[in-house]
Length: 306
Length: 265
Image 1 (cartoon, rainbow over the protein chains, first blue to last red):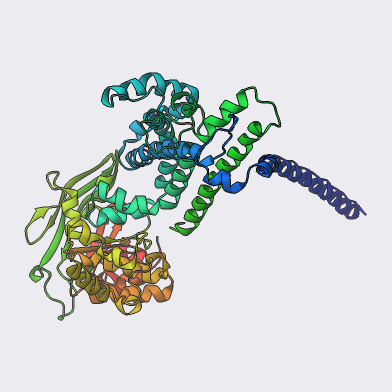
Image 2: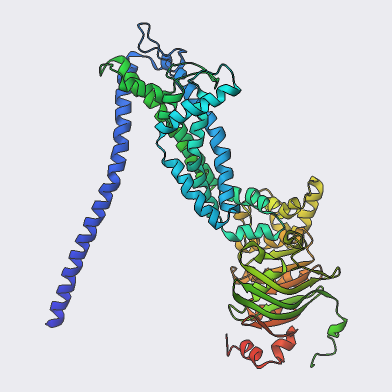
């Protein structure tokens, strides 16, 4: 009889444990769903609001028009004008951030003493914590005047200064992820290289960097997404004039800068001018999505099994 | 000494390298104590002993791998002949040492490159650029490592696509390509299945004619199968050294006998 009640007690205990497990599982799942729901919500709003815009402006015009004057009476909606600003400033930023971030990561992972690394890493993370508006004014009031001494006639608002500062801002993102990827490369692989008579530099660039390539690709993709999506620096330092140009010494508006400008202005909600920000946002979203997909593909293609 | 007639007198054998009064320290901890050991030319010398006895530490002194990490310190000498240079001298660049000696590790560690580039790596590091010479020497190294037949149609494939045993033979080919004077094996079959182990052992036996070999092994049967000489180490000291069959069948030290017969270790 006593064994019988013991078994019954154990079963009841097991049931209550299973209920508890289920509850925890549901809590965790709902936390995960919040993130997914937010993403889906954003995508839904972008598409549905853009649809309103594209009912009035043909997609073909949106893609091919060479003017962006949505607020003029003779309105034109050529997104390429804004994209040129985004692409130029991003290209400058990445031309700085990718080499600098990679070299920094190689240094921290392969050359620096543990002591140096312990000092340098928090400082770099501090750089990543600076509000972008501060970087924006740094570009406008420090870097641009400096550049004007080298390039006479450089306008006060220009893509070059904004791009350079944006690059500096992105360096810690790239170096941090790249360094993690390189430090994940097994010691055995490095020793294999050293044992063949390789120097530290040869080992770093011929063995460790290729072995960490999937992680480096992830870091670069994140850097690209940050550059394309960066708003404050370009809004402050690159000017707000839509300008179809790939010349970094000119002033131009990026997609993000335009969105800020319109969103904070006093355009009535629902007007065509206001709808443009969703179309522009959608274009931005599709670009970053493209890069993220490319990054996903690269990570899978070069995933290392050590 | 009970050595049969067939064995030549040890004094008459040429020596390739020799540890002399070697001490090694990991920081304050002494890992090797007063080791004196000759490595005979074109012979296989096996290092055996229980885990932590210092056999891998000893092996890694030869190509100065300990220099990669701070706090390590050598005392004494490892002399490499015929030019009689002390590999451990602080004036000797460890990279120069590693150019002359090669090493094969516990686990196959091919680089994330093609089969060809793995074998060519050491040659490229040495500045060899001539394409035909590279191709010739890669092919020769792969032949010496008994791998060429299996990979000749796919030299541009990633090395990671090979099986574990093939990867380890690739690492041997990579080590052989630069024509080392001394080849160091650090438990080269510990991550392999018995069949792959057998092929690596055959290979080590065959390579003896080309290169002097020093091999650390956990596996006493392996030491008995592949080596000419065996050194038994315990707690950082060299307990016994001699012809492999002498060490296995007529050990002079009680400790060696206990280890070999399985009463200890």
